[in-house]
Length: 202
Ligand code: GAR
Image (cartoon, rainbow, N blue to C red; front, side, top):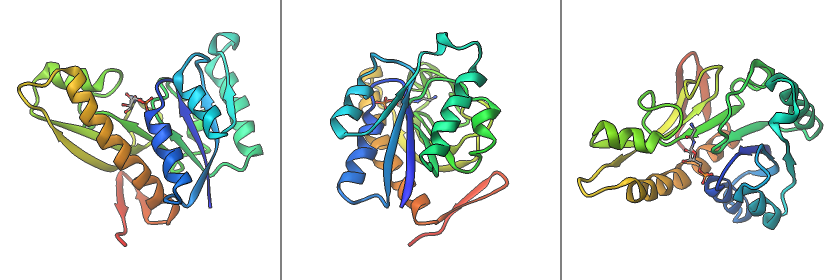
């Protein structure tokens, strides 16, 4: 069974989708830990309700990102974590975590990368005027939303869409795709070779 740590900073709808999948027996993995940088984030309450431990930290209490990441790394090792899942964790990671977990850390982003990385991927796509956007799950490297792509799903933008209506469909696509990708990793079906990622179908 895969031992998973989820990193999140916000609402936690993706955290919830993963926790629900695990509870329903749809994931050969268990969420061992939530790592969160915002005490007031709704995801913290979701973890409490799901009975999942939370490692909460205040970035401002540290001299550098490396310093809190060293502490997180020690906690991940202590708990035997195999996979880090970034689910709306809105901080850039340093090599302290990226290097030891390269190929074992994934992120979800609300656009068809490499288009519209960074914050507000949904709004960026609307403002640009693309007719097709979507969601991406990728391995994390040192850049911003830049690592090898594991899976993508397209979401069409209608003329009538505003940010709220588009976000609703993007989030639905995320909540379907993310648990599926984690399960593919748990089954050992995902292979990383250079920039190309292949999924061996069942
Ligand atoms: C998700 O839409 C995720 O794709 C995005 O943050 C949201 C978190 O929602 N991540 C990024 O933009 C990463 N660059 P959630 O807290 O409800 O899961």
